[in-house]
Length: 190
Image (cartoon, rainbow, N blue to C red; front, side, top):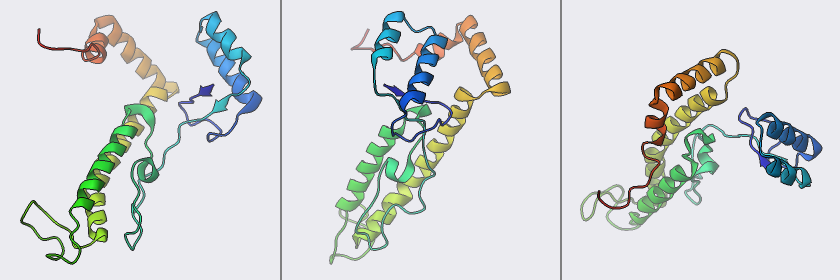
């Protein structure tokens, strides 16, 4: 059983042993999980406290000679609070492929235009372009995710304010409009 800890938690993907199991079982009791679920969990012999780990975007995403490039979590691991990790990885991959497809080594020179857009005279130039395109949006999304994570998992005054706001949104019906509006699939026209 993997137990996600919204506040960073201990352990980095390794085992957690008895401490992880004890914490998981205590949380299941605290949140009134159904007895069947608790019974299944109590019989498990492997528990992991995976925590929530992320890092700032790396300064550079490729080697100086252009022989290797990073994409996704390897260069900008995101907190999970906006659900953007996989999305940003896919966008990185697309952008990287697009930039590399425009390398024209020995051709018309670096960064020339014409005949289908910008071309790059080397892989190194293409990797620099990829990084220039992708770093700003991933950095902004990481910041937004951190802020949302702080609000979602905050304790003390932050937690009290969050809980009061969600209670008011629920009582007024605003939560349903905001959070459920696009949750129902629309298949075809009405």
